[in-house]
Image 1 (cartoon, helix red, strand yellow):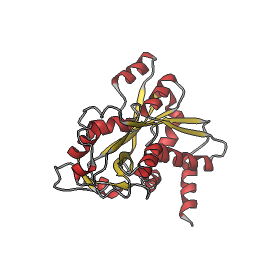
Image 2 (image 1 turned 45 degrees about the vertical axis):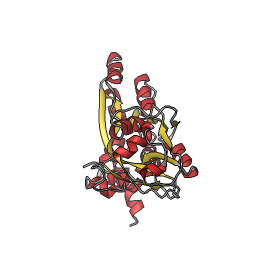
Image 3 (image 1 turned 120 degrees about the vertical axis):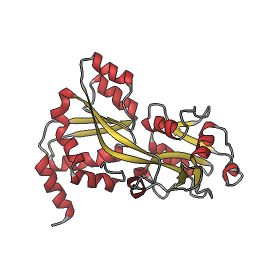
Image 4 (image 1 turned 90 degrees about the vertical axis):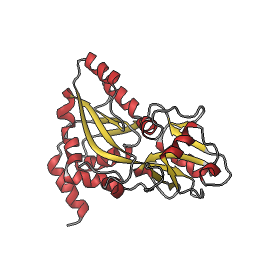
Length: 271
């Protein structure tokens, strides 16, 4: 029996139609949610699952407003967001469905292949302005970041910049795809994207969090071994009254079959 057919049979045993569902939020998680929704709807053609991005903050805001069933987020929900849900009488539920290795990317023609955390901090805070300062050619550095509603924006600021501010006037992009396109088309560019978005149009850098003693390239294997340092959990948030509605979808993602799909899409499975 073909593996794809076996996959559908396994999922068919898990799922039953439960009405239309909406998933909204993190751009990083779009490939994962879209693939899961695609399989879900093949098994249940009467069920509609709508997946949209916009950023983690947008998804959580939609959850608070009651306009989405699941908020997908690449950051942990904030205290004030939890408070808003409590004030509405809602009980929050959180589940980690995967992990993501965040890749730092440059134009393929850029001769720089590795950077330390300190060098990346210098670039994105504006202290380092030319590639020759980090072993590259005499070329202005053009950093690209996600916009402030993005969980990836906040995670990068926390992990790489140690909560220092991004350089004034940084190019803030509304979606991960926009960063990929901009870096691929701009020789002096640098940006960051989730591992699942990597392709041959950009070059992923090896990074070091030990002052340059060792540099590691982003990969699922390196993240699972604990060698790649820029890894974060990926969340689904929902409210208790929607638990029955979303349970089957989440159960699939956390199943052995679902976690195999997580890896196939380009994310790191949960332990």
